[in-house]
Amino acid sequence: MSDIGDWFRSIPAITRYWFAATVAVPLVGKLGLISPAYFVLWPEAFLYRFQACYLPWVILGFNYIIGGSVINELIGNLVGHLYFFLMFRYPMDLGGRNFLSTPQFLYRWLPSRRGGVSGFGVPPASVRRAADQNGGGGRHHWGQGFRLGDQ
Image 1 (cartoon, rainbow, N blue to C red):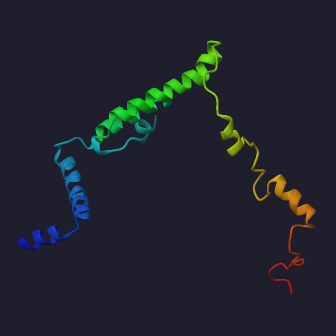
Image 2: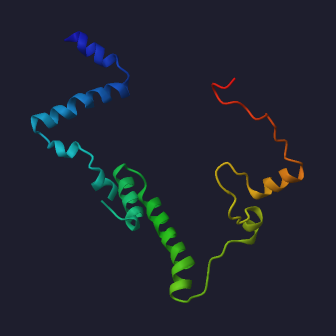
Image 3: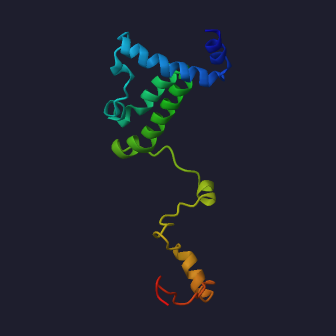
């Protein structure tokens, strides 16, 4: 027995706990101490168990369970709801004044460009225009090529 105990204590800590859990969890389920249904991840219950509007509160609950700061999560939820209300709900639904707007220096630094991607394998229009002006843009003409088996 001493050899098994020495071997178990010689395993690195994380591996030791992982190994112990892989032995203990099925054993607890097999002995009926805890229902095996609690050990199964039901994807439909996990992926579809709450709606998107509740996601901030679900994250707050998970953070509370793992021992994180609930105050920071509450402040984040409050700021997010306040931003959404002042940016969208109040001006659009209630006809109120728009209190929040993006500062102009951000538009100068980060222009709001749309359509930068023109498709798979096709460079954006600005690159195509530059390539056409440079006489093909340095493309290579490798010849017609041959199919395999042709000689």
